[in-house]
Picture 1 (cartoon, helix red, strand yellow):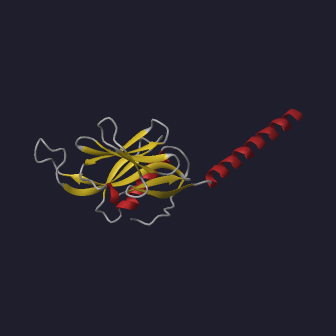
Picture 2 (picture 1 turned 135 degrees about the vertical axis):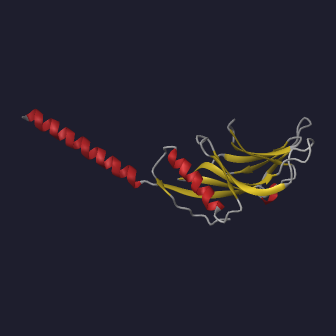
Picture 3 (picture 1 turned 60 degrees about the vertical axis):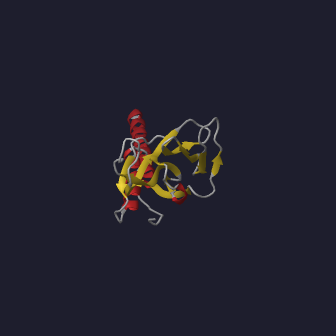
Length: 192
C-alpha cells in the first residue's frame, strides 16, 4: 500500500513538473527585431598591403562586422565575426557598386543576430567576354544566414512593395524552422 502511494506521488510530481515546463516553454516566444549598419558611415578603412586592394570594415551587432573589399574585377561584401575565421559571403558585385548608400539589416532573434538582409543590384549578361557584369537591370533583397543558419539563403525582388516585410518574414520563418524556439513575429522596424 505504501509503495503504491509513493509510486503514485512520484508519477503526479513528474506530470506536474512536465506540465509546468511545457507552460514555461510555450510562454516564451522568440521576439524578432532588426538593427542596421550603414556601409558609408563610421567604417574603418584598411590600407592595401603587398600590392593588394584595401578593405572597409563596418561594425555590426554583437561581434559581427561587415568587410567590403575589391578584387581585380569585383567587389565583395562579407559578414564575419571579429577575431574568428567565420566568414559569411553576402554579395559579389560590380566595381561600380556604390556601397556608401548601402546599409545591412541584421535580423535578430531575442537580440542575437542570425541573418542579414542586403539590397543589391541584379545585372544583365555581360556584353562581351571582357566584362564580368552587364548593365544593372533591377534590384533584389538578399537574405543570408549567419553562424548556425546556413539554411537561410534567398533573394526577393526589391521592386515589390512588400519586399522588405517579405525578406524579414522569410528570415524569421527559416529561423523558426531550424528548431530554435517557438515563434512570435514582432516587426519593430518600419520598411525602408
